[in-house]
Image (spheres, rainbow over the protein chains, first blue to last red):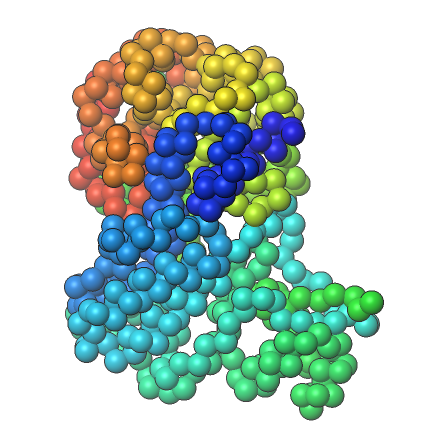
Amino acid sequence: MSDREVQDTIITALADARFRGSPEWIDRRLADGERVERFARFLARHFYYERVVHFFKYSRALARVTGRRPDAVLRGDAFEVLLPRVVLGSRETAREVAELVVRDQLGADHEAVPYFEDLLRYQEAMMVVEAGPRDWSAGTDPTTPVEAGALAQIVEGTTVLELDHDLPAVLPSLLAPWEEPPSAPRRGTTLVVARTPQARVSVVKADPVLVGLLREVERPWSARELADRAGLEPSATEALLRDLAGVGAVRFSIGS
Amino acid sequence: MTGLMVGAFYNPHLGAELLSTDVPIDHLAMADPPRADDPSWPSIKERYTLLLHDYLGQLSEPLGSRGIERARHLAELYDSPWVAEHFQCLHTEDGTFNLNYVFPPLYTEEFLQRFVLNARELAGQLDRPLVIENIPGFFEVSTSQMPEPEWLRRFFEQTGTRFLLDLPHVWLEAHYRELDPVAWLKEFPLEHVLEIHVAGVEEDHDLRGPWISPAEPPDEMLDLMDEALALCPGVRAVTYDAFSPTLTAEVLFRSVQRIRDRL
């Protein structure tokens, strides 16, 4: 095993609580187990503090109305219970931590914010979609041209959110100074939340055509097939697919 | 000590205060690129000397053309007198796990060669000095082949890069190894130091001991800074190292002033 592989083993142990409990890690005796456990817990709290503060920033802005800061759950008993199964960066742990925050926030006084539940679903989706292995090779974002024969398919984790309020209309105001919580227009709004392999999360407001296209690419199809199925012009379909690929919602592969 | 710059990190939530303060601050270190919606950024750029201190990449692997281009771009944007990186290896080679927090490499021959090669590659593409910051280990790894100070010394001798001495990191290592901080400090290759970081420490629940925090540096840290300044002939800047949304303007300004008062 190279030194680089040993380093990867240590990083894995710090990131993955289950691995720290495995004979594969324990029997190697690379470091003091108790110290490693303490540092891993420190890292886990730091890792999810940064994410909760970032993704639940709108709840944080509303804390003076609701009385609850989203990051407070990271000092609570529920997070302590979660620590023995935390896998840093995994979608499962992101989902569990986000659920803790949502559950805690729902217990707050949020009558003054009619779109509060939509807001929580939005922030939760952002945090969960961001999770997952990241491409550190400093490659370019996916802008693969739609080659003839290339098959488009939705990227795992891409989420379609159906909301009762037009959240994008209110989000900037929430982070600006306000006396009363800003209001959001009550109208059905569909958002697509996706991430690139480099973990850049994007939100796209979607119309029924775009949502229909995303539903279709749950199975791989060529652009021409999709155009036929969706009743769209091939050029318009290719443009939509390119846009979706740009935000990481769709990837292309060459069929076998 | 004359000609020594004293500064802090640019915390965008304190942009307005940094523009209106009369506390003398010579420079601001940039841990993140400026946000497009930061109203203070244009005036901050105009008023302060800026030091590039972003995450450029881990030097256990080559930064690649895109990473180097980003480093060059940011250095030019800030007109940074030097460019900083860390002795860190925080994500697995395949990208599966990322600690999202500075974490040191193994102090082995293999890692030394990796870091030397990749630092030379980066330094060769920059038109200004590259400085690299020491990172503390909370536990020792049995496969390490040499003490951290020796590894660092050999690195600087082989690359000609400069040392960003993070004093709280030295202090923490001494604390957890039950060593005298000044004696431990003297083990490091201080002749290569260009910049020094000073920060606060607080008790951490998980570590059951002190760790870096966005607090004022305690007197003990400032005493260690006095020792370090006397031992680092090439030092040009001291930076109060706190970058956090919880940092207050009062703490930042008092910390800078207390550092300045010691010079």
